[in-house]
Image (tube, rainbow, N blue to C red; front, side, top):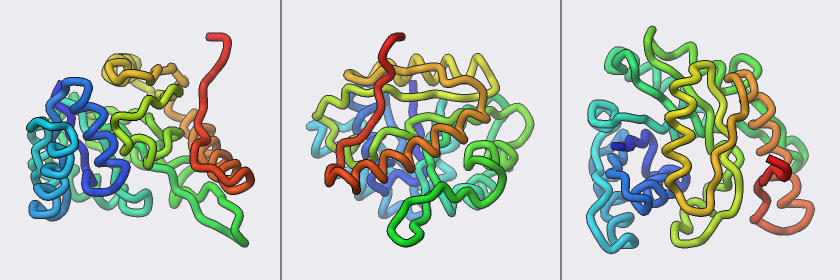
Length: 218
């Protein structure tokens, strides 16, 4: 499965690239700057010890990818999709990993720019025939980037297209130490984004960077 990552030069994008490439998937790492994309891809390949990640501009990553992960900053996500909308083919699956957070008096708050969740707002930026799935929202970006470290947590996957959601769950399941969990329709992204805000609070309260989620009983 050829994985494309928009915003692949940030820590979450690099982490996803390393995890999927480590699981055997070819990865196309995109950026607004081809030079930054190439540099980030070379850094990933150096860590992996082989060439598995290619760096290109975002539009080229979209053209090559079978599944496209949106890992740009939350406040740029809608603009990025709108800019590329005409190039998004029917059947494309876009995976939104973004979580909009602001801090008020040192306390994290869920802060989507439009609608009750970022994922629901971003779904409106896609052309007919494309699907948006929310995933990886509760997995800390810095832990993803420690690519040789086992994560031992769940990845909650939500979406309104059952076929798209199941495809993403299968791909997630190829990464060792991660379990994909069906989190329901896309509106469940509201809860997932709030769970990330809670994890940020827990990290601050207990002076750690390790908070993540595993569901017991399923």
